[in-house]
Length: 162
Ligand code: SAM
Image (cartoon, rainbow, N blue to C red; front, side, top):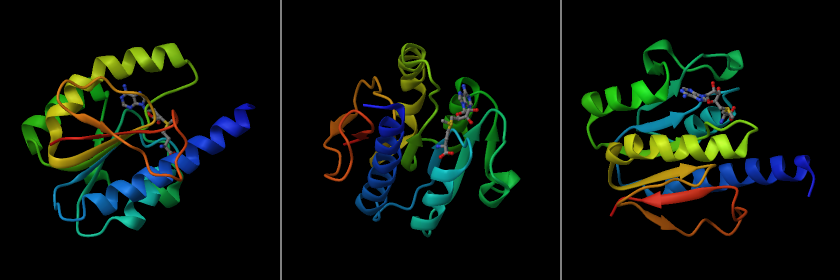
């Protein structure tokens, strides 16, 4: 499997899992958190498919395509290891969706980082909320659920707070 194949699977899976999460949480009004703005592609998709919910973006350095750059007051600028705990103080357990795409090319480092930030993500989710991630996460009380049929196993993960 080429890197191009892996990339395509990741993109297809991100879209499928985001679309699924938006539908499955449509009864919730809490904010949507996008962790890792990058180029802004998934942010752009989220804002297209989410309505009636605030979207906040967590990013250490905004360098997105100008067409998909969030308003300044919707960006929590800084390292997520600091901004996630600050968000808990500000928002409490209210997020309807948390989407994370924070990884780089080093898979081992991505896994270590996912382990490190899982405890800071978990308390932000509202009951019934979904966490969608490109990396396997390490939660104590969230339940991993099946990804939609059109997503590729191992390329995206979904966790629910019951
Ligand atoms: N989903 C994005 C898109 O569709 O364009 C791509 C996200 S990109 C793979 C990962 C982003 O996470 C980068 O912009 C990087 O700066 C950000 N990031 C990585 N580690 C971070 C950290 N510790 N705190 C805040 N942002 C971080």
